[in-house]
Length: 103
Image (cartoon, rainbow, N blue to C red):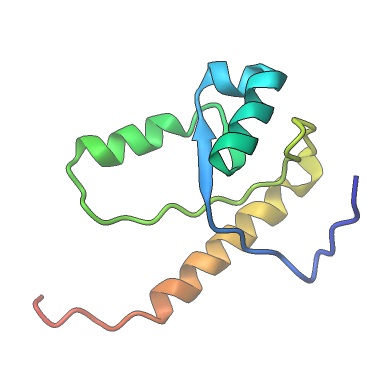
């Protein structure tokens, strides 16, 4: 495992695969990563995406704080840090937006 610098979070843009059958099988996970340029996996996040899609939202952004490694190794020690980094990134995006004029 590589050392993570707590003062230097990284931003990765790309696809996150979701679904229990994909995440639970190491070979399938590796195949998805190489064929579809998947950056990360999540077992439960598909429910969030289905909810957004089910509400007919055309434009949305999903920001994830991910602390697990792409080989399936998990480290709960980094979960609070990942959540804070994701929230900080979202705040920076919102603060950089223009206020709506049609309200």
